[in-house]
Image 1 (cartoon, helix red, strand yellow):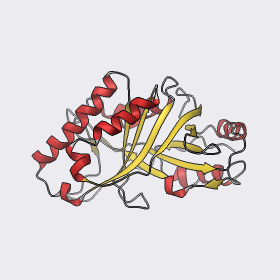
Image 2 (cartoon, helix red, strand yellow; image 1 turned 45 degrees about the vertical axis):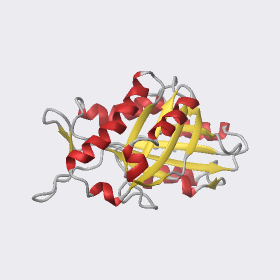
Image 3 (tube, rainbow, N blue to C red; image 1 turned 90 degrees about the vertical axis):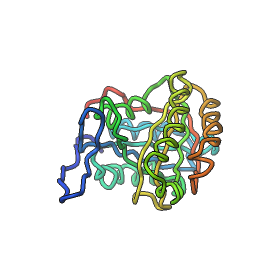
Length: 248
């Protein structure tokens, strides 16, 4: 079975006063974004059959060993067209060897890339950077988790929100500049069964810096004062990655 060839979702224009485009620096705009989903399974006797199935599907994907479950794995997949998850991926994960595994739905995460308005290369940020990050063989460790902001954050004025987000972002960039941790930020409004707002992925060469960054983030205003929920967390190590250069 092949899951190749599922292209970009159809573009739709919104009505007056509604803007669904992603916007970056220098008046860039795009109606493209990448959807990413993590499924977690347990009861895996041997991952070789899972790797063979993913390779045969030609899906863009990562297979993780679940650090907290000796018989567990995580399957991260991504596509521009969300119909991929309801069609080809559904068929792939519903058939053997995945079909007989026990799912852990509490760890399912789905989100979409988004722009903050300051990205110098908007389409790279939305489409290529997340792919490069999760498919980099030099960064085999990963921690994925959802979060929900408290309603009080939405009631702050834009200047206060900006200062809080800059503090958080500056800390994350410091770890990235040192090649300690690299992030993927996804919006999941209305896509998450627990009403979370965002899904965060941290990847890197080693596990400790990823944990250390989460610890350091606890002291920021956003985490300490304006988060309602955080987690559950999935920690994994790459068992297999699809080719970063595969045609889409």
